[in-house]
Length: 451
Image (cartoon, rainbow, N blue to C red; front, side, top):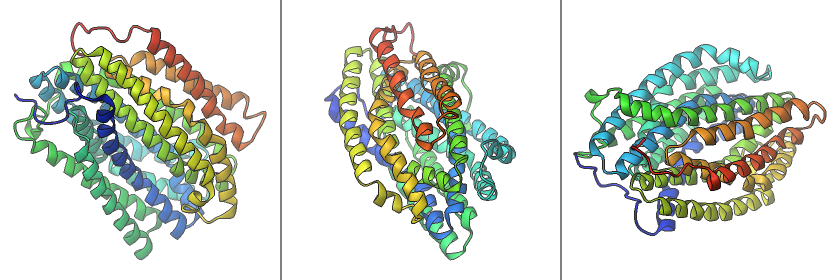
C-alpha cells in the first residue's frame, strides 16, 4: 500500500517547512475559533449582555469535553506520523481506521453524557441565575452535534499526521462562512437568540465533518484512504493511541478543570465580570491559536523525524519554533495592550464590561511569553511518543499550583486581577520544569519499536 502524496517533512529547510505547515494550521484554527467569536459578537450586539454571559459561561465545559478527545486525536497524530515517517503503509491504514471509529464512539458518549449533565455542570460552576437558562439551552444543542465535531477533529488529525494542513483549512473556511450566514439569519432575522447561534455552530460542524470524511474516502490508493466498511479497532494502534493520547487528554482535562475553578471565581464578581471575561477570551484566542498551531506543527515535525530516526533535525526544529514563537508572541502582546479597548468594543458596547475587560487584557497579555515553552516542548516530546512526563509536569505545575493559588491567595485578596494572576505564575514555573526535562530527561532515545 503506497503512502500517498502529502507533506514529507523529514528533509528540507526547517524554518520554511514549519512556516508552511504553521500558516494553514493557524488559519484553520482561526476559522474554527471564528465559530464561537461570531456567536459572541452576534449575541453581544443583537441579544444583550445576559446572552453574552450565557454563551461565555459554556466555554469552559465545551473545552473540557472537547479537550478530552483532542488529546486522543493528538495521540493519533503521533502514531500515524511516526508510521508515515517510517514508511509503514499498512500500519498507517490500520491506525487511520482505528482512530476514525474511536471518534464516532467517543462522540456518541459525549453527546449523551453532556446533554444529561449540562444543568448540573453549569450550576456547579455558579453560573449566574440570569445567564443560566440560555447557557443550558446553548450547551445542550452543542452536545447534540458532538459526533460530527469529533469526527472532523480526528479526520483533521489524520491529515495533519501525513503532512496535509491545507485541506482542513479550506473545509473550515466553508464551515465558518456557513456559521456566519446562519448566525445572522437565525438571530437577526428569525430572532432565535442563543438557540440560533447554537444551531448555526452545530450545522457548521456537520458541514466540516462531511468535507473531511469525503477527502479521506477519496484519497485513492493512499495508505490513509478511509474505507467506511473497514472501520475497526485494531489492538496495536489502539493501544499506541491511548498510550500517547490518554496522558495528553488528561493534561487537557486538568487544564479545563482548573479553568472551571477560574470561571467559578469570575462568576462571583457578577454578570459584568463574566461578560468581560468572555469578551477578553475571544480576544485572547488569537494568542492561543497561534501557539497551538505552532505546537501542532512541532508535534507532526517531531513525529515524522523521530520515525525516520533524524533526532538532530528534530531538536533543531524545536529551537527554530521557539525563536519564531517568541517574536510572534511579543508582537501580539504589544498589539493587544495598545488596542485593548477598540478590540473589546467589537464584542460589547457596555461601558462597565469594557472597563473590566481592558484591565484584564493589560494585566495578562504581557505574560504570554512565559507560556510558549509549555506548548512547544510538550509538543516535541509528545511527537517522540513520550507524553507521560510532560503531562505530569503540567498537571502539577499549572493545574495544581493554580488551584492552590485560588484557594489560598484569592480569598485573602479578592480581586479579579488576583484570580488572573494564577496564569502567569503557574506558566513560569511549568516552563522551567519542562525545559529542565527537555534538556536533561531521557525522552529522545531510539525506540525499540515505533510507538
